Length: 131
Image (cartoon, rainbow, N blue to C red; front, side, top):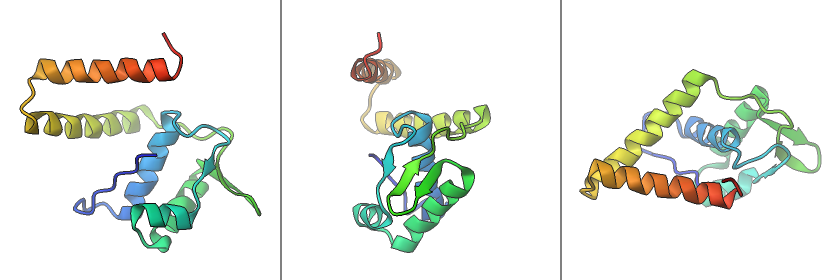
């Protein structure tokens, strides 16, 4: 689970974490019914204060993305809300910007960057068993 947070971003860390988790659900990397790591586990993995992680998870429970089963833990909701088209476009633009910056840092041409993206896209499809 890749949850890269940016401490230099003015967005609060709990909000960044909530957004990353939302994206994992929206892309199917966290599927309905999947368990969500505990507050302690996420806090340790991300070197965050447990209160920060707890705030992110509570926000996602309030939004209906996650559900809590008493005595069992937190899980992706059976029918989590989907990102709006605008939210999806914003998340895609942010990811594309990050990729473009990295590609330029590596002095890759636009064609090389597009080829690398296409290869990774195909790899994801193979991993999911899609044509």
